[in-house]
Image 1 (cartoon, rainbow, N blue to C red):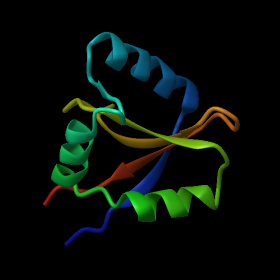
Image 2 (image 1 turned 45 degrees about the vertical axis):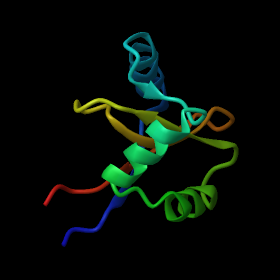
Image 3 (image 1 turned 90 degrees about the vertical axis):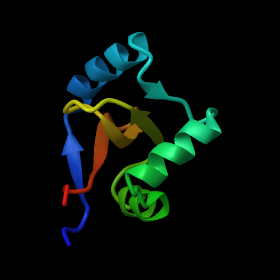
Image 4 (image 1 turned 180 degrees about the vertical axis):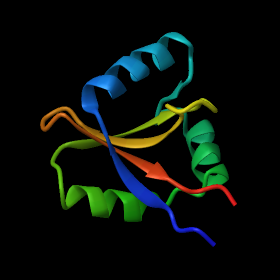
Length: 93
């Protein structure tokens, strides 16, 4: 079984992808609790582990979900303070 990894993503590229996701209605807001929980469960995101790992590297992280099957789809932790973006990646299989 493949282990999930954390991948650093280019912050500027991510912001462009996020704007498109918002325009397309593919960003899941944390206030949409049912949809948020469903995404986390289906994609087996370990939020606490991901958060703890990334907080050791960056400050001011905010969770963001882009619900899209394309390359930008996923669960991210983003710091606008440090212009950093980390993505939770779970290999298929």
